Image (cartoon, rainbow, N blue to C red; front, side):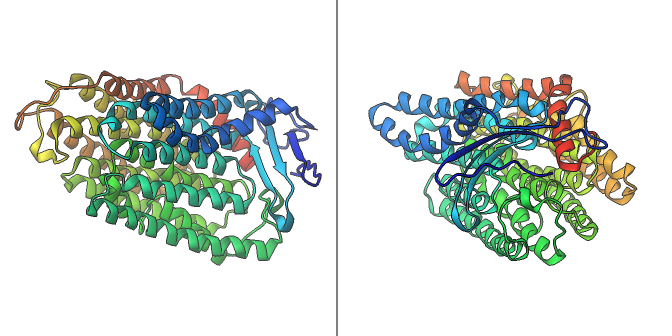
Length: 515
């Protein structure tokens, strides 16, 4: 579909675009016309990206004046991004695309574009990120390096906003690398030798994948002569170039064979691990996969099979590891690796049902997995251990945390009516309806393993006889955050139609079919 592009040397172009006419199979009600949008929409898009990305660098200064000012400012910056993303929803539901660009030489124009897929991902990241920042108020206040923590966490979220709205491969890559640098500092937050080694491992593994992906990006430029994703629409890439891009996506999303860095990142504070697993880092890989291979390039059938096979193996191997692990946060981390496989499966099916399931999975998994990690943080900080063999009976002293953990676990397991049920059902159904029965069976087995290891975890930590002193819930704010995430996991299922509407439009724009 052609893009209306306004270019003036050094000037800004704000474009509000709707596709022309309703193509065959497009969603009813998605209007198709092109028009120049207003400045307000462009400003909203800029706020979504730069409120956290630029504002983060003020936080160390605020921290010198007042810890409370710094903490609240960090939350306000992320909430500003969330508010701006939500403000873009009405236009996205109408099929409009708000774009903002500055012309640059050599194909390096800086351009942002808010279509339904980008808006969906931005809301997920900023919503979960806001709750994690709020949780950090009490969790982080006991430690040093607080200025750096808030700066890196907000930069992390701002870079995610820049990535999801970028339409130029070079700037998408730049934001991709900023998230890697921020996560490196956050994983090594405690600065112990083991912490730094695990942070270095995460950085090196993801940086290696990013380097391979950069080679693929340069190969794409050599083939197409542009970095603009809109100009590449419908191009069929050779399998070799697709494989180069895929290596970067798999490494960032901690998918087999690059999965080992993510459980090791559990040495970081629990709000950091929640950011990595639920809100931002590992979701980058699946988002860019959807952006490149469903929305831009022709999805090669061989690549489809490769991705689904890797996703299936990753889901089973990591689920098996979770069944025998005894570290609380590593179990939840292996669960993330397994669940990311489900998202890749949905996208790899290349049909509307699978894509819808994958998008809902990103949302539902983000809410529930953040709840699991933050619950783990409450247990670790109050009980003084992550070893589940040394825990037990904590439901007596931590009833709110226990119930919140269980509700979030129900969503990850796919128990109705929680949000995770609908996404998991849709992904597996997409494989079955697409005559991919083997993949459907593999992921059904993965779903059963998810139930086993999460029930094992809940039983070991919260039920049974206590080991040692029963630690109480010392922070009402931290408990309120996990209860909120548990409630959202349930509400997400009961009101699944709301996010589904935005997902339907995103699928229409990506695949050109009804969602």
